Length: 264
Length: 111
Image 1 (cartoon, chains in turn cyan, purple):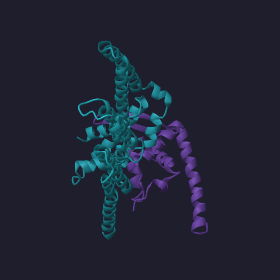
Image 2 (cartoon, helix red, strand yellow; image 1 turned 180 degrees about the vertical axis):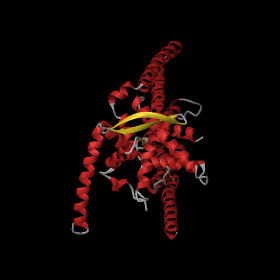
Image 3 (cartoon, helix red, strand yellow; image 1 turned 135 degrees about the vertical axis):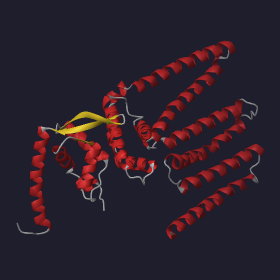
Image 4 (cartoon, chains in turn yellow, brown; image 1 turned 45 degrees about the horizontal axis):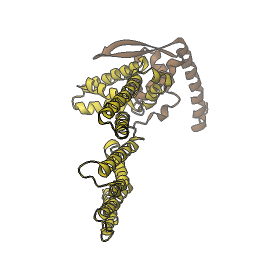
């Protein structure tokens, strides 16, 4: 039903706007105008519900300035219940971390090791929780200035965790002398994060430079992994040749596509 | 051939005041009136109208009240104030003068 679709759309748009009478009034005004337009468009029987929905949304134009004004007042932000909910959540979480630390340390008698494991893990979970909220609001507002950076930071966190697991723990414990190789994949993960930001979040074409950089950094990391695994640098260096080859293939594809597009 | 709202820049407030001087109205109806009266040459987005509404309300040119709803969402109506009417009349007087001068400058006709 169109009414519910409009309401869902506005909920997303107003996600990062603090709850206030002014914001609620503005939302209701937008909703009633969208409905008025939709009801009139419905008289044209040739239009589908999706077409009516899109026409109504398009007719709104760019009202991000009005939304920014509603969310730009620091006093309103301080008054916003959602901010205090987040603060309370963070404090409770910190308290739980301390309790977990004391309880585990008390049982295992390993106070130092428990601190090294519990606190960074809890901080990581908290970081993911809050950055996920930023990602959700970025998606709602279609602004992705931080999206690539946040996704890259997840990759770095996962890599860091992988290093510690591979180096010191788990069934495939291989030691820090070899486990450092996981860090060489960071450039690849960063380019993958950028590619995901372009393709999934911005719904745009991934720039060629990101594909080429991603492929090159992958082959370099793969070469280092193979070399460290077998303890020899020859003939594993041949893997690096994959970098220029993949760059060439990506380039040819891009040029082909461009030629086809201009041919049309 | 619809043109964007650039052509209206500087006149949006006056156009809205003119529509409101003929009777109270709400966002969608005002947008519709502008597009209809623009004879297909004018395209205006709701956002432009909301921003103008807000500005004029802050300046005391219009007031608002809530009216009957459309399927659960109330309509916000706008009403022109005495001050708004005065501003509108002055703007129209000014426009007539500017129009006369611009016609002279652009077309070169004699008065």
